[in-house]
Every structure is written in C-alpha cells, then in structure tokens.
Image (cartoon, rainbow, N blue to C red; front, top):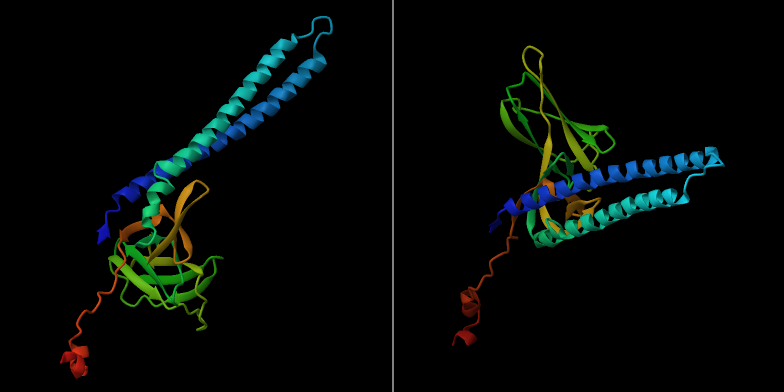
Length: 253
C-alpha cells in the first residue's frame, strides 16, 4: 500500500524553511560578533582619549554593555527555539514513521549497490550526438556509457554495471553521477542533467546540520530527495496442506 508523500513534502518544506532561518541566524550571530568587537574597540579608544577633566560617566558604558549582552542572550534563545521547532514541526517526530518503509529517492548522485546504479536523464529535443559519462565523487570519469538509441527527445533511463573503462569492477558503496553531453545537428548544446533513482528500506531518521535525513541502504539522504514511500511487500504464506496430507496416508486416514 503506497503512502501519500504530501506530508513528507510538507515536512521537507518546513525543514528547508528551518534551514533558511538557521542561515539567517548564523549571519546575525556573525554580525553581532563583529559589532561586539567594534563596540569594545571604540569604548577602549574613547577611554584612552577622553578628557581627564570631564571623564565619561561609567554608568553609560555599563548600560551599553548590558544592551549588547541582552542581544547575545536573545540570539541564544533563538537557537534554542529553532532546535525545538526542528524536533517537532516537520522534524524527527513526523519523519520517524518512514522507518521500516520502502522509500524511493531521486538525487544527483547514485550509490553503487549490488554492482549497479540506475540513472535517468531527459532531453528537451532530439540530439545528433550524445555522450554519457559516469563520474565518481572525486570528479573523475570512470566509465563512458553507450547511449545506443537514447538520443531521442524525452525521458531516458540507463543502468551502469559498475565497471570502469578498463573493465574493472568498482566496489559497492561509492557515489557516482551521470554527466550528459548532447548537441543537435547544428552543433548547439542541449542542456540535460542526470539523476539517480533508487529504492531501499528506511532504517533511521536523523537531523544533520538542521536538515532531516533518512538512512537508506546505509546512506543518509535528505528527505527532500524522497519521491515516494510504500509499505514493504511481504510474501503471502502458503496455507495449502493438501500435498502434505497426500504424502502422509496415516494422517489422512
């Protein structure tokens, strides 16, 4: 039974918004740190250069320091509130239901599993020339695929067998991307980006740097990369015992 992914998409959007808020908070804290250093430098310079006959009232400095400290405490409070939001609204509590489900993910990089990776790409128009390269995590091309009849307009799928250009088998677990180079008859480049689709059992959910991720086949994948969720398929038990009765006349009698 397939599960509606609308809730997951909503949670992913919330997580994305939370990540954006976290980025703005980080920027605010960096700005605050710079402002604090500037304030201390100005206060020190003012103390050094003040008129000894008319010194600045120390209560003014105290008030300014208290104001700066108050802003820092507010930023800390915001951090704590962001953590609470991440754990509740669209966070781990609403994502834990994916554990034990079969999830399908689509991302730029695919993991070599059982000696293969499935890639997808779409051509907005037919290509006169097409080149598909499998690139590893270091940016090195390890294999070039024969596109065969995949140069027509539309969506295409190709599976890499995990072998490099020399025929050597690559170990499972590595991440690879598909580089698509296509051109029309006039030599004009046709833009296309390869993606990888994989299905596996979700075994855990966690939060990494403010982003909710799900562990699938041992790989941590952002929830935003999930395109479908389904109940695991279980084999139907065979309750037919007629064969056993036929083979055991004594029991049949």
